[in-house]
Structure formats: structure tokens, C-alpha cells
Image (cartoon, rainbow, N blue to C red):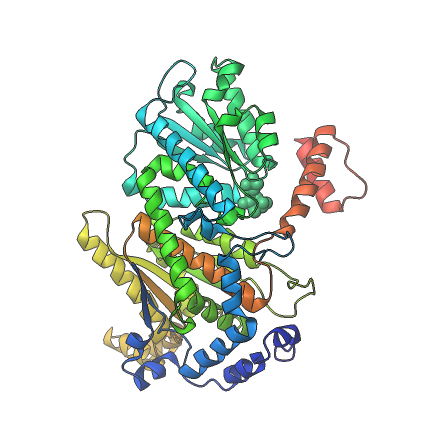
Length: 545
Ligand code: F6P
């Protein structure tokens, strides 16, 4: 498949796209040459926004490239699209609703929605105060020591990631736990050391129909009853967050203990809403407000900065350039920060559930790549796991390195070494190791000429591989809020360039539907003849035990 002829759809949406393709076909410069030709390159390609510095100079990017990419933003109508997003217009065209997560951190009640947000935040703050002050009592009048958030996807990944990231801010009397997986092992191991009398459950589900969440909530309910909590006392141990008040109350949760969500906030964009309740319980209301403020600052930057100095736009343009013209099939997000260990998990849903689409906004199948795989792990662990593939593999995998200038711990020497590891990897990706250098190293080791000829080529590292480096001053609620919003908006910009809807997720429905049918068959033992022989054979094995 000649990718140069394909992408007719994209060229219709972005008439200048063929010029970018031609620019790629004529590409000659290596990263090393780009730096040699312009000693001021790094300074010119470093952007600061509040607590975040972005160095995107280790990119296959020239002024001509940027100019061509910026032309595409104009052809895509990006300026108007950003206004539509931030003004609460129905950018989610298949569900005909806004994606107004920015309103959750705008501190504005000028609209009805804004007033609802303000009202809910007051309810959240009061609840947090009740729990922290010990005024929220369990069924035997005990104060709450542990909160268990039961949710999955956007009702888990964001809060779980933020709670881990802000572990240095956990100063409150409650410990927050997370249960998401339908695998009973997670709730079993979470509850086994908790005291039902002092445990409070948050059932977080925008739809309140998600199998995993309802199963775990039912197990939690039974755990309370088995411990001796009377049915009419369960209300002291369950609150809910949902758009579906009817189903939440039907589950048995007191309507006073239900925090509203709205259909104009997507699940993977909802940690700023009441879904963020476990965050506020973990770090305190003030720190949760600082998280919101950090995101709000990035919203303002996104709305106001010219595209050539707009952090979300630049990150999106680079990913667009690599996925459309360099064949990048995935992108790595590597936090050189132990507390950000769950950031890649969160970013996977944010990016892949938003951009993993095969039809454009008009419902026409696309003939170009859309979302690419996002992956990563906390560093420096990955250096001893998969970095070999970055350095000598055959795939071009763009990398976002994320680190903090200052640690939240006293081990300054180790933090300096962590930062050194981060820089070593981006420098190695850029510079690589030549055959001559590999030969000389072997010669310096005293190896024979035969060994040198035999081994040198195995030690060559191609280099010339791109990366971005993001440096946060320090990992704080504010800087984390800005970082998350940065990637939320990067995803949106990509969706506008790709002419796809970032805010629906119809692709997950089929698995859910089949799952219900398969479970029904496993319960009844009657396996449909229509099933493929693999599924049927596996089900028979399961039934056979
Ligand atoms: O199945 C995918 C999904 O709908 C995600 O988009 C969502 O974040 C998750 O499931 C949980 O949904 P809910 O909050 O409605 O339980």
C-alpha cells in the first residue's frame, strides 16, 4: 500500500497536506545536522508555560516544516474549533453534546452549567470537610478511616493517577483506595485489611451501568452486610457520582449522597468533576482547587497563545507529522518521576479512546492513520526494560520525556542522577553511536582486530530519533493540573487535524454486548452453535473446569 497515494480523505480536509508529504519525501537533514547548522536551535525551540518547560528541539522540524504544519491548522479551522470547545459548543457531533471539561476549572457560574458546577463543588467541599473532620459517621458511629473508590476507565484512571502523583500531599486522616477490575482479586485484596465500620465507598460511574463497577459495588455492599451493617445503615457507607440518578438511587444510595455529573463531560475528561472526589479526600480541598487552577491556566494558554507558541498545538503538530509522514505507529510517554508512574495508564485512555477512530466526523471511513498507541512506564525503570528497542530497534517511536526540576523528597543526589538518566536517553536517541566510535571503543578495550570487525556493527546505534522533553518546576497540584490539561488539548488538536470526533467511544460497545451474552452462556452452560469454534472451545474448557 503506497501511503503516498492514500490519504485522499486527509487531503480533502487539509488541501496543503500533499505539500507536507512532499516536504517529507525531500527530507535530508539529520537531527545532528539541524543542531550543527543552528547553535541557537534549542533556545528557539523551547517554550515555557507556567510551571512547564517544553524543549521540542530534538524533533525532525525546520522552520519550513512548522510553516507547513501551521498552514494545516488554518485549513483545519483550528482557531474556531478551539473556541467551540472552550465555549461549550457541541463538538461531540455523534452524541450532539459539548466536551466542556474546561468549564469545570473555569471558576465561572455565568452559565446554567457553570452554576451547576459551582453547586456541586460546594457539595463536594462540604462532604470532604465532613469526612476529614470526623463528622461523617459509620453504622456504629465510628469516623471514616478509609475510602474506596469503585469505578473504571475515566471513573478510575484519572483520580488514581492524580492520587498517586500527589502522594506527597496526602495529609488527611483518610486513606484512599481504588477498585476497578471485575477480577474479584482486586476488591478482595483491597477490603481484606479494611474495617467495614470505618470504610466509605464511592461508586463512581457516569452511566451507572458499567458491569465492573456494579459488580464491585454489589460485592462491597454484601461485605458491609456480612459485617453486620443493617440495610438501612448502608447509606452511611455509600456515596455515588453519576449522571444517572435513577439507577444510583435504585442501587440503594441515598439521593442526598449522590454527586451529579453531566453528559457534557466525557468520562476520560472527568477527573475535574465530582469524579475527582477521591482526589479531594486524599489531598484536601485546597490542593484539589490548585489542581483545577493549573488546568485552567493551561486552558487560557491554549485559548490565547499563537499556535507557533502554543504548547498543546505544538505537541499535536509533532505527533501529526510523525504519524502521517514518518510512519510512527506509537508514541512513548516516559515520566522520569516515580509519582507519575500511573500517567501512561491514564494517557492511554485519554489518547487512544479519543483518537482510536476509523471514520471521520461525517462517518466516512478514513484512508489515513488516526490514533496511535500510547505506552510507557515510570523511569528510569524502562531503561532496563524496553529502551533497547528505542535505540537499536527498527521502529521510529517518538518519545515524550517528562521530569521535574526539583524533587518532593530529600535525596537531591539521586534526583540529579534521575535527571541525568533522562537527558542521557534523549541525547542517545539524537546522537546514536557511529561504527567508527564502536570500533574505537573496542580497540580501547584491547580487543583483537578480528573481534572488532565481528562486533563493531552490533554496537552501532542509529540515533537521529526524535523526542520532546517536558520539565515541570516541581510536581505540585498546580503543575500536574497544567500537564494533564496540556495533553487533553493536544488530543483535541489532533482530532481536529484528523477530522475525527475525540469525544465518543462507540467501539467499546460491542465487547460489552458480547460479554453479556457470553456470561449468560457460561451461567446456563448452553453455548450457541453460531459461535466461532475458538470461543466455543474455550468456553467449553471453562465450563469443564
Ligand atoms: O467503556 C468505556 C467507558 O465508557 C469509558 O469511556 C468510561 O470512562 C468507562 O467506560 C466507565 O464508564 P462509567 O463512568 O459510565 O462507569
